Amino acid sequence: MKLNKAQILRYKKQISLEDIGIEGQSRIIESKVLVIGAGGLGSPILLYLAGAGVGTIACIDFDLLEEHNLHRQIVHSECNIGQAKVDSAAERLQALNSHVTYLPIIEKLSETNIDKHIADYDIIIDGSDNFATRYAVNDACVRHGKPLVYGSVLNFELQLAVFNHQGSKNLRDIFPEPPNPEDVPSCDLNGVMGTVPGILGLMMAQETLKIILGHSCLRNQWLWMDSRTWQLRIVGF
Image 1: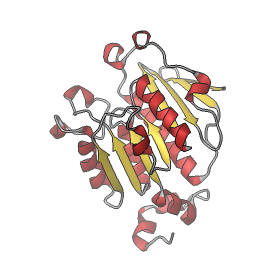
Image 2: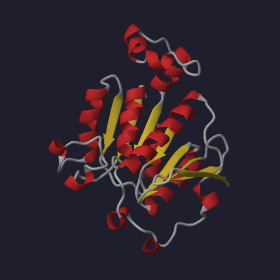
Image 3: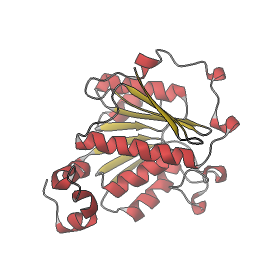
Image 4: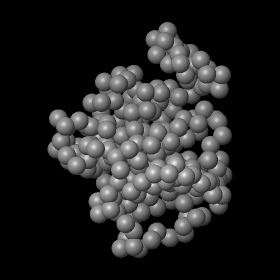
């Protein structure tokens, strides 16, 4: 792909990096990414992928924006309360980068519809908040051979992994079956510091861009971090 003058000017700071250059920026522009969720994780992921110039970004979410979302879901604004999150995000992404194709999908993801949604994308990013969706997304990525960038947060802690990339393992290789929902703490009941999904969302966006560029990324590794102490562990699996 040959970049035009406007693209070179817009992305010159990235193009100036030896590990990216014109070829790498072309890969970013030609890439297609599906983001699951337009909430705490999806917000920074969407913003930074659009900022980087990812050519096609789709986002699937069925929720409406509520006031209590705003402390962490920073792609949205007060004026969007009551609006579908994917539509609210569309306004912000269009204002940020009008050259990116953004596809909002208002639908609840499930095992019955996941396959049709992931088929057209190069990379899937899971920013969902429940294990039923996480396992459905993981299994669909395995069926279709799609790399999956996975992240989860609770309170001050975050976890990150890349699954099913160039023959690497997937979620079921670590946890064969989802936990009992009654045994899983939820953000609604236990809370989450607003900055924590922001930190993780940026890390997920970074791993996504590394995959697009062909750079080394997490492989059969589980990253855990406590943002209170900055204690970080990476465990192989």
